[in-house]
Length: 310
Image (cartoon, rainbow, N blue to C red; front, side, top):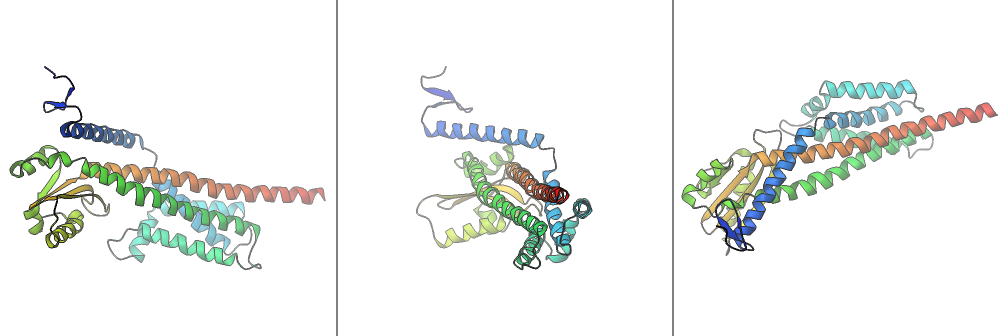
């Protein structure tokens, strides 16, 4: 029978406002967040990443085309768009990374580098009056806008939201910290998590994905013994390596060191942020590119009408 002011926490009745109740609330919130992420991913069927990469290389091919042509013709724009689509279909952006970058580096670096190089060079050309035309100005503005929005969305979502979300998700597994050391790994396995202790860290048994950050924390606290218990939640998002995407929780209380890694939640968080990033980037880049083309067409039609009127 339930006592007044108590709720069922799944492991017996707990008192409202107690630490056990707060832990139960946190667990319910995490379960709800996991389900929301899963529902979102099940609906993310549009390949926004490929679409956005096509738009990015459309911008690159447009700037290259306009570097040798003072005016933008329909065939030139269509040719640049077709080249961009074909380039993405044959995974040209990955080949570009393999050719230009050391092995194991993210091929996105080569794409961003090419964007910066073409946009900066084209924008520099606009500083010279002889070289400057209305069409080139429009394409230059759209290229700068594409690069700027790409950097802005990356900063907000990938560099700010993603680490913060990963930290909160990692701490969502803190319910395993009070578990006795003898059954800690067993409880982790039953929860679908991967766990290690201080002996595993010292023996270098951690996977490569989390080894560097965990060992850095471990060495720091071995050299600087904390007065109280300490904990760090973080995300690992190296999607080029095996099991390289996860959220991890490092916790140390005296000599008891524990590491809890959740790959499933890490993958879902990473996938959600990635899809949102490419969704926003696709919309923004599409508006800037096709908006600039529409303005060029509009000004050209207006110019022709004025010539006929004269």
